[in-house]
Length: 225
Image: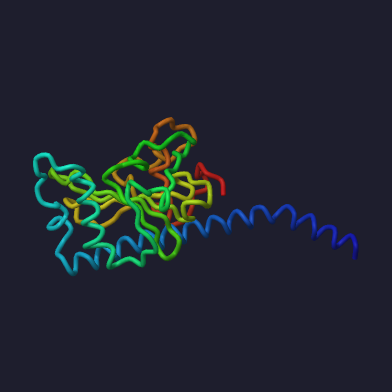
C-alpha cells in the first residue's frame, strides 16, 4: 500500500505542473475569445444604430488651433457609440489613466512601441468582467480612420502585463468593414510573436497565432503559462 501511494505521489508530482499549465492556457484563450467577441458585438450594435463604421468614424473636421482633436474624437466615439454597448465600471482619460490601465511590455520585456501609455488621444476603461482596456481613434483626418484597443485580460494590477501573455489588441479599420480583428492581422504573426524578435512591437502577433490555431495556444508558442 505504501509503495502504491508513493508511486501515485510521484506520478502526481510529475503531471501536476503540466495539468496546471494546460488549465492556465485554457483560461487565457477563453478570456481572449470572450473579449474579442465583446468588442465585435459592441461594434455590430453600434453600427445597427448609427450606420456602418466608415460612415461615422470621422469626428468632423479639425479646426485651426484646436487642441487634442483626436483625443476629443476618441472620447466622443467611445461615449456616443461604444459606452452604451459595454458594461463599464470606470472610464479614464490621460489625466488619470493609471486608474484604468498599466502600460504593458513587449514580449521580449522591452517597452512596447504602440501608443500604450501617455497617449493624449487615448482613453482607458474597465469592463464589468475585470478587463482593463486602452482605446484610441487614429487617422481620422485621413482616408484610413481606425479604432485600436489594447486589453489586459487579467486587469491592470494582475498577471505579467505582457503583450501575448495577458495583453492583446484588436483593430477596426473603417475602410475594411471587417469589424474588430486581432492586431496585427496584416503582418506575419510569427514575426511579431517570437522569442528572438527584437522588434518593439513583438507580441502583437500572438493573438493572431492563437486564432489561426483554432483558438488554441500553439505548441511552439513563445510564452510559457
